Image (cartoon, rainbow, N blue to C red):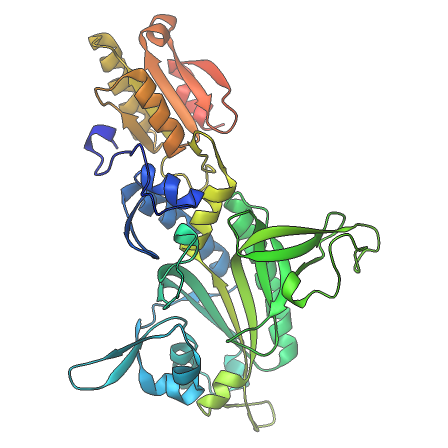
Amino acid sequence: MRQSKLFTSTRRNAPKDEVVRNAELLIRGGFIHKEMAGVYSYLPLGLRVLHKIEQIIREEMDAVGGQEVRMATLHPSDNWKKTGGWSSVDVLFKIQSRTEKEYALGSSEEEIVTPIAQEYIGSYKDLPLAVYQIEQKYRDELRAKSGIMRGREFGMKDMYSFHADQKDFERFYETVKQAYFKVFERCGLDAKVTEASGGAFSNKLSYEFMVLTDAGEDDILYCGQCTHCVNVEVAKHAAGDTCPKCGKGKLKKARAAEVGNVFDLGQRYPKSFGFTFKDKDGKDKTPVMGCYGIGTTRLMGTIVEVLSDDKGIVWPATVAPFSVHLVAIAGGNADVTAEADRVYELLCENGIPALYDDRDERAGAKFADADLIGIPKRLVVSEKTVSAGGIEVTDRSNGSSTLVADSAIVEHLRM
């Protein structure tokens, strides 16, 4: 992509009402556009990042046996009334049509996925089953804040599983738990799993996946010596106490952002719809249900909060909008421009996604924009590099630079 043709451009300042880092940097970098509090549009650079995050999630959910579907966003009110959610879920957007029928905008999918599964699960032989989708969600938040980490419209991967008994659910939960760790690791984050109350979705214990950041909305206690981690709201200990799990480390208190969760839904939703299956003895049984969520846009915002510096965003290579940012510092020198064009074509021919800054801008502005946008590798073609027969390659994460022979640039980038 030639930057001169890119739909968006960088901005010197973010809107004054944005106070969190993810929103400031993503708006300034041209990744997102704010429509109103809690609602953002995703522009070409932002959508490329979001698609990469979604693909990582898709691969890991497929690997544990999840089957991707796309469920309705506009929900019939009858489904929500059957589960009691119509009157109890306070963040539900409700709509009345011209025919005076009532609908809800999907804030979660239990009310849709349960009757769908009911049509196709009749026997224990049909279990277990896990289906997921990656779509938009809508919640009437009173205070939409934290940029794209907490909005009224947001992206979500939600998977639902159905099991013959509690034991099988717990087996599958452990499998998904490991898959979640892989997702967050591939996105460049170190996540901790905590225990918390199930809230509106379940009266059972739930598990949340947290990433340490001051932009988070939860306080957690964690042990530096083992994996013990708990939400402060359900903690029986306090900061400074000895870890109840390993008995060695001291508990530390920290602010964290939730990037994923799992709820043990039990049999609540199947019972609401009269959903049963035949067990091995031919008896009717109610399936056990699990819910597994990852906020895709929230995850994107968390990456920016955790992996950024005073110059801008520092994207992990796995989710960056492009692999390299090619910057031409020509200063009117036609030979430099021709060499930069040649390098760009070389990258394209070898399948290396590149954003090519071919704009007629001063060098300082180009370098500042490159730091703000945060693509992992910056390639500079200038009079100096051309005369040396190479390309300057700079690592965005640590600022280290090296001169690579132009004939070896493709091999270097693939290392």
